[in-house]
Length: 240
Image (cartoon, rainbow, N blue to C red; front, side, top):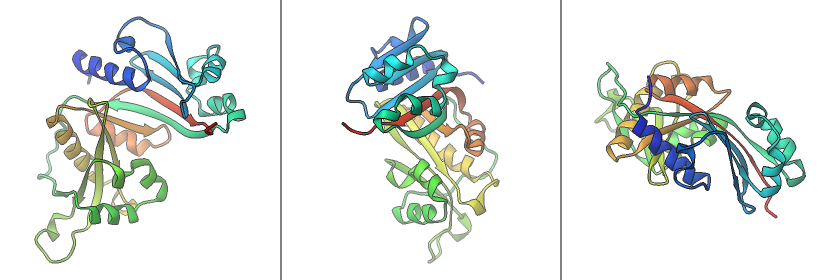
């Protein structure tokens, strides 16, 4: 499955703005781009549709100019470059996007955006997963619930959750989370499909970011119709 060229152009525009580049920077030319911001709290290396961008303070960008793309995609490389500035790894991730509605044969998902259900779902999930998805902090959360409890007096059981934030008024940054006991049942894909449908109805391009070591998240993204488009590696810097 490929993304429509128009979708690719929209994604390139959004990421050009996110990385402090001219609007058309990622959509033309070839080779690596550099974005310097001495107040940047991060050093970030992004690959997107074959282009590379290194963004950060001037001292870090200059130090990275001589390094290859595979080297800069490694969090350990960025940590080495920033060790005198308190570099703290935020991880290596893969970037996915989609421009087609997901298709599922199951009955329509029963979802809720109630804050209490979001909190209960996060309580059932490992802290690292909660921090990565941050479902309680996103603008548009959705919780898949057990439809068998619908209409009863008891609060329905949360099975999985997904949601999105809006980036640059263009992208819907989607994340999903599932309690360990509810995994491998297709729940994450179903609720992610709801988030994707809502985002596309709002005229946004859905984006998914998964850690390189989180194969379950990558698998969910692909099953929901997302297409791999690049990578992002970042380290946080101590404020000066």
